[in-house]
Image 1 (cartoon, rainbow, N blue to C red):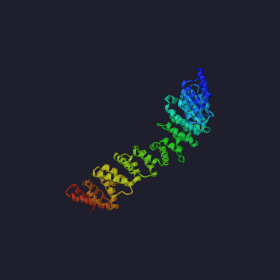
Image 2 (tube, helix red, strand yellow):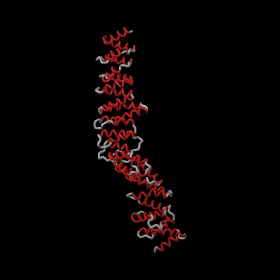
Image 3 (cartoon, rainbow, N blue to C red):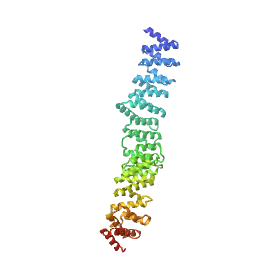
Image 4 (cartoon, rainbow, N blue to C red):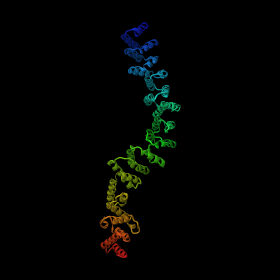
Length: 497
């Protein structure tokens, strides 16, 4: 066998290309992995003939000898990318035995070699491999380090909790040892890795880099990492103090956007601390895209303070209001009025700004329906807001007055500034609305209601006094033998009529 093996090796070394390729196939089939064989076949990996190199690499792939690492390392920056890929696969198969040779070869190697080495280290993992990757990052460029960090991502997914803990400790130690002025690419890489690990305890180191004095790339990566590390975590008081200045900067930068995301400013609009609310509102005004989020939040909001903060903020944004959104906000306003919930003021404010004619019509129609249904208290809830519209239509004013009159008829005579009386007085003085005829036809008003109203108005001056006399005369004529008719007649005599 020794003679036969020697003859095969001689063919590998001195035969024709075809003989060499065949001899390499035989060596692979024999699983021959002696040092002499590995050395000779390894030399073939440097041969200029691509076919011979291919068969030599096949031997290593087939046999996987323990001492083949040095030969495979040479292939990591081979001009043929397929050769590179095959070398990476073979080195990955060697697992931990490939780590130290790779680490020794990194310094001074080409970029292609280093990135392929990083691929192997990420694939085999382990403490030594991860430390080696960090050392690569310490002296790497922005471009190279980004690729290396991207390679770490799938490796992280494959790690168990114990490996994650060990890697976090290594990355944290690595991060705190760096000088941001001298090693900015490495600092950015540490931030990327900490963000991928997502540990809240990284916050202390990361918050050091959010200030305006830092390079924009450093700030952005620090904030991105914080977003990932602080998911479902509360921002601390001292951390707010670091983030607020970012929001108050004149220019809307990437750092500002990330700080907004980190603070979740829409939520801050409901914060008990007025300063946080003000900063949040001021920052959101800088973002036109925030309008859609604010509308969505308002539609679902149940907190009156937060809803009002959003209501005050929305008019500062430009944009059309879709009908489905108006309908949704009207539904929320309707529910709030029915519950007598103070959040109704926020919805009303927004709807008036968005489409005053729409919300006026909705309020007036709903109020009118409730008056007809004799649900006077509920009707007042919908009709009363109409007083604050520029044009409070006479018919709606009358509906509100009649509802208030039914609710509080017993106080009309004693209450000089009764709301129903004031509304009807205004109708008499400032409109052509046929108040007396409308009152006579209003089926919801009983004779006692009309008597109380007439009693109050007849003691006034001007047109409303005339309305009071008309009402009392109407009662006296319609019910001449009843007590209420006689009372009306007596009141008219006392009034000098």
